Image: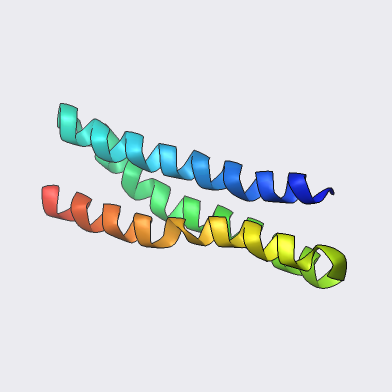
Length: 97
């Protein structure tokens, strides 16, 4: 994998889960439809597992290919940005319901 592909992987996974979280949170706030709230709370464990798998893959790949370690760590950093955002959204969601 090229270094640009590794960075794009982290950015795309971050963007997808960030977008899904925003849709669930703001969809519930705007419509008061519990389908959005249910989807958001299901997104937390499934998203966590998926992100951990990708994160583990990046860290393992960085250890195997020493030349791309820094790029793998940067890409993993993008994934880790989702953690405080998910915690904040979960707190907001629990307080709204």
